[in-house]
Each structure stands twice: as C-alpha cells, then as structure tokens.
Image (tube, rainbow, N blue to C red):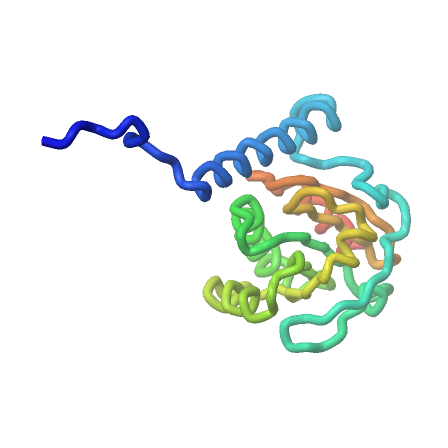
Length: 192
C-alpha cells in the first residue's frame, strides 16, 4: 500500500472556483440592487441605470441582428413600444429572464410591441445556435459593447422599457421571477 501524499486529497478545479466566485458576485450585485438601490424588496425596478433614467429619452443606437441587418432603435419611434434586453448566453439569470421574454413576446405579438435582445459581445455563431436551440421568437441583436456602454450596463440581465415616443418608462436590473409589473406597464403603454 502506498502512503497518501500530503498534496493528495480533494482539489477544486479553477473552473469550479471561478463559478463559485461568479455566483457570489451575482448574489452580491442582486443584493445591492434590491436592498441598497431600491430600499429593500422590489422586482429589480430602478429609476436610473448608469447613463439612463426613467422619464428621459432612450439613447439611440444602430447594431446588427443575427441576419446581418442593421437595426436602429429610432426606427421603432412612433410605431412600437420597445423592450431592450441586455444579456449573454453564459448568464443563467439571463436565460431565466429570456423565458419570461418569450412569454411576453407571445402575449403581445399582435400588438405594437417589440423586444430587442442585445447580446453582449459574443460571437454571432454562438448566439445564433443558442437562440435556435431555444426557439426564441424575439429580435436578437449583437452588441459589440457600444450600446451597453451608452446605457451604462454593469451587470446582466437588464431590461429597459421604451415607449413609442422614445422615452424610458421602466428599468429592471437583474432577473425577476415575477414580471407582472413589467407586463402591466407594457399593456398600459400599448393601449395609449
């Protein structure tokens, strides 16, 4: 029988340590937003996120979609209520939020409503495969980082609801299990 080496035992691969650190950071950010920014509780709804505020004009942008077409936020002005979603394929809270977005897309599809889902700096093929596997029906765009920088995105997922006139009506930072407040606001804006 060979004696046990002093360095043998349970070792954690770097990937596991990185995952634990990521989860801890995500929980800390969620706590900061829900408790410190909102004053406790809430659904992640805030009045300001980085460079944008509720009641102010949403910064315009133009970026490519998965079909290699240029899409501009201003092209929806006067026509549709737009929900911007900042996300990445590796982000589990983003994936959970995207299920909610798919439900909203199906519910409001015949209405004057558009979801622009801005992927954060990932390769187009990775994003295309991810979206195809899950069969999402909303418009997915590729953000090289310029759009998220204009909006002051620091953590994902983030949602920004923009009315037909281009004014920001709601900002949601982080995943929310209950999007009923967001849904009510969308209904209200569509009916105006």
